[in-house]
Image (cartoon, rainbow, N blue to C red; front, side):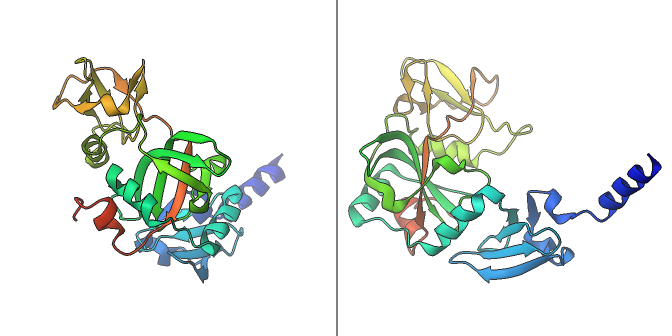
Length: 249
């Protein structure tokens, strides 16, 4: 029994401390010499742990490294090898819907309806114009690529752009809770609990929602409606001006 405990203690002491976490601030990279550069990617860099073999993604602006789940590695390699673009007509439609840029300027998210090449319609799709590959936030089965989009259009479930901006920019007031007050056309009030792109509740759809201006006494908290599919498009010059022109840092 003592030997088993000693063995576990030695294993704990020699554990791979880097790969116990999901993310590391880029400024701390020098403190993890076991993370070795493998290759530059089309955006960012691929690292690998010399102790356990775990792969990591260093973001384009080097603000964060994120651990790549093993079942996502093939997606990351596919993302890196593909040129993911759409035609001008699709871009015009996406621009008309409007996107929200994330805080670190790694991607612009546009909620929409997408018909795929098989003819299936995904009413709750998010097009990501992105500098980062599919990471742990994206379920593997929901990851699709730009060349799988046959047609794109506005979704009735997508929230108006000003509502999406407000929920994206709202700071957390508690762990994971960043409330934004909204109201439907009948006057019923709700609270978006975190960054939201869609709304689908009791027959009320996103296009019917407006900002309420309520600051306190949150009512009927609604957590983010999950996307059915994510479509990845490569970041390109002037995409911010085209898809998210208001955001300035």
